[in-house]
Length: 169
Image (cartoon, rainbow, N blue to C red):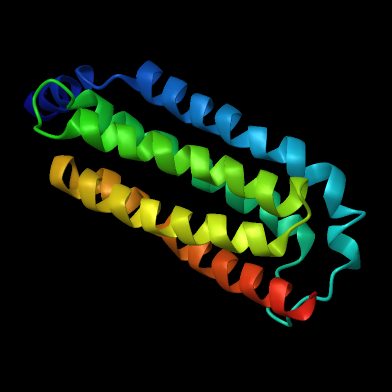
């Protein structure tokens, strides 16, 4: 009985509705990039020469969905500590900046049909993701760890973007 009371107390203060809202908001905000991306996949992107390590098109949607959900969860963990952890608000601003850069990449690469502008944007995005991880680490280490898969995917995306630029002058 004592164990169940303790576990109820431990979970009682967690804001599951807030977590869900943050994850949903991240997913919805992330889908803005799709406005620029989806119309170009079967047309412009399909015509590009691609490196051998290019994932199949069907992989991108599920991967980005998971990444946006993780990003929302990470931001939520930092948001919860905004009143008690020094630097939480600043970390959230850095997070917001990298999120905007993420959407801008879709515009630069797909919307403008420019691997060059995409590469410039994704390099800045990469630095912003690193900065976000560093800032989140100081506030809540779990939030920073939730962004590691995002960093890994951005690493692949940066390499892919570079090769798409090189193969399609």
